[in-house]
Amino acid sequence: MAIPNDSHTVPSLSRQSFKLLGILDIQNTPCAREAVLHGSVGSLFSGLSHFLATSRVRRSFDIGVAGFMLITLGSWFYCRYSNAKLRVQQRLIQDGMKNKVMYEGTSLDPTRKQNGEDRR
Image (cartoon, rainbow, N blue to C red; front, side, top):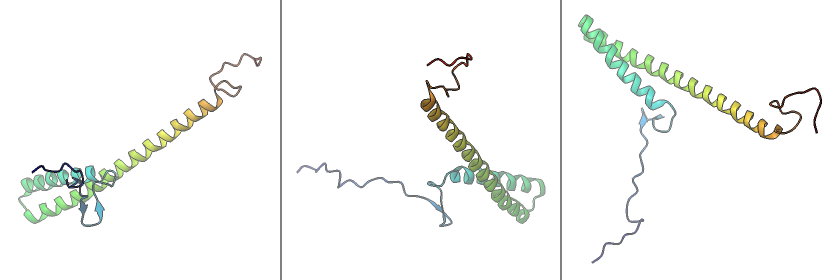
């Protein structure tokens, strides 16, 4: 008995999205994954270092939670700002390329040398 090689019988391995606290889709939101990873590492470092310095458990936990929130938000805003700045630069370059194609070979071409007399 032969096993059918039909693509409909094989379940697709689509990636399930992971939602943080049920509201933030980590995989589809730009910068979210990196921000949460930076925040968790920063939280671990700040909480552990405060515990090693003071040996106060509750205060160290509070420092870790505060570190997670601050580092996550800081990383999130920095990444979003960098992405927005990059999009603006890309838009300027695209407009410049469009203008170069449009004005190339005309009297309005900024790369042509102005000799004083207009050659037609």
